[in-house]
Length: 236
Image (cartoon, rainbow, N blue to C red; front, side, top):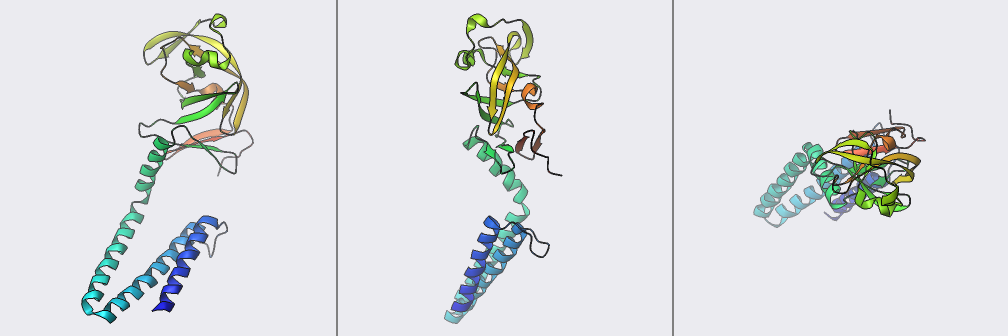
């Protein structure tokens, strides 16, 4: 059955190309749906060829091939039915493996995956120096750890700890500062108000509202955080 195998392989190749490179819909089907349809047709042809080949050798081989093919079909159906749950697990695994790494889309959106502890970690820069933040809408402003302040250009002598803040370790005082530049992915904001906590008061820098409110929008969609800069229109 070489002809059927060649056709099946060609359909699988078409499915791969459509899924990875396709952009325009085909007969009201999205590229992803078209790719799935082509892959199903290709796999069906390859399985049919294998079954016919098995029976041509011996009926026991044919029955064995039918059983294997049926098992593969059931596994594929179960996987497809649980695709949302599997995507959630995959997203969270990516969030842990690529800790702090964000993806910049062709629209300029910054997208990060949720970690297994439920948080979003984002790598960025403060005044040109590397920094890591926890996304926190509960923080009214960007908050920096005192341990990192010197790296960002704030000497201990110029910090005036006068603003009361609530931390996981209780109440503390923080020093108001202004960040010349704060960058997350492809998004850079200038003259961002921030606070610097005293040493030991905070376990991580917080990406709070003094940065987030400057964006066009931000949202948590499933297990992904999406930050949109001013020149990006939210998807409708």
